[in-house]
Image (cartoon, rainbow, N blue to C red):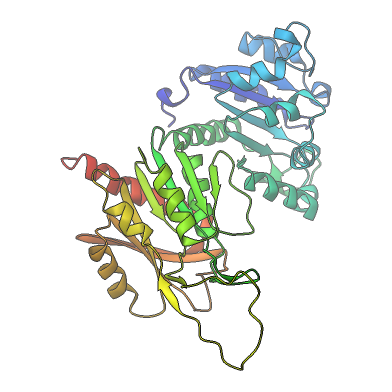
Length: 408
């Protein structure tokens, strides 16, 4: 059952596109209004062929927005006004055409421009023929939108208006209300929390063309940063060299070496509540750097190394420092080494993962984590790093709240 407090007084834009499922959106808007939400409706020209704007105006008590350039809006910038007003935007139904145009980053009508101009959480409720939904192009477009932070609600399977049966039906209004409620709840779960996460490898230069590095892809740290931003945290991501785009809503600081990362972390650590060190920081760097490329020369070369700064220990040692979470990538005796690191570095939590196996770890979209803290632990089974990041943050927040409010 949806709690009134979740949707009460929320500013919700329901965007209706050209699909036979548009008739369901009238009931969706009605239900949202019943639960206390203030709803405004945006319609595409295609949507107006299936249901009239007057229907939505009668249900919401607000004018329906159709045109990109609205002479009645402030400075004719209606899309900016709506973007600032919205707490969330739900596109229901979301046609295959609309998904393609959003994925392409188009801004040629009110809806697409609005989605580019807002920082509010975005959700799509796909509705189309089963073959259109299964088409590789549609699946690629949805995956691209999800990577950008869109939340996909549905579709459901069942009988369709065309007479076929399969996946592609828009979720029922009550299901969409429930999904939107969960989305808004999640979007505020870490509101007010300042979180810093490090990600990726560090590169320690030998000469202008060579360096010491490791196989970290940065996927786990980036997934944690994206999940934290989705949950409403103020996120700073300190990233080593990776081939990943920064997640939406995240402040990303690019670095190269361990010393670069240390300087960046310490210069932005003030007032951080939670620090998650997911980066695979090089333990050593070359003692000297050759300004010129080292020639092949003799068959053997001696490379002298010196220890890099221990960023995690430095942060954990701070007086009144943040809740500090470390990572331990091990090939053997995982729990033993992880718990030793937990105690030695005075961490609040450590995430241990086995690397070098056939599944998970470096350069993979999947992983499994064993979480340890003083007096306890929890296992997160093998799964996609995006899901694992959400599960990790739930555990971190539970321990963080216990630390600041131990009586709870």
